[in-house]
Length: 152
Image 1 (cartoon, rainbow, N blue to C red):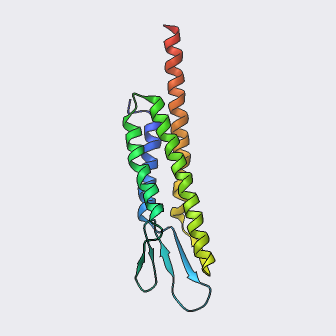
Image 2: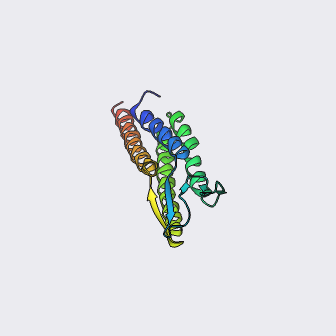
Image 3: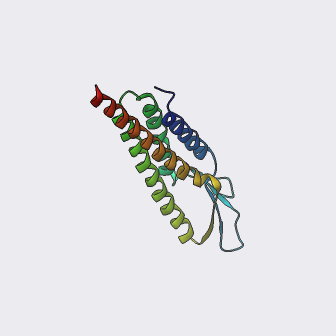
């Protein structure tokens, strides 16, 4: 059924992912006093002169993949094993997002910039926790169904 608690967990994870896609992740300023502050989004980096650098597109692509997978997981409630695999896939993608984010942040700092991470960079961690809770609830439902089948 769609009214289960894992559906709410997955829906909240989708909402947090969409919010993270729209908000800035970090800002960085050069070590020297010359230059302004650049802002990093999931898809681009906005430089102080208004130019866009799309070198961080992989962050956007990873989070963009997790949204439809979560929605498919919500509506595949009849097949709980597949639903739990979708949750595991999203957890791996979210961890991969953090690996890519760490590489991008390291490259920004290596270029002589000070990096300041914003709050939206934490939202995928919350989504990761929600995916874990949804998967745990899905597997609990599957165990309950299997135990009920043994009684018959």
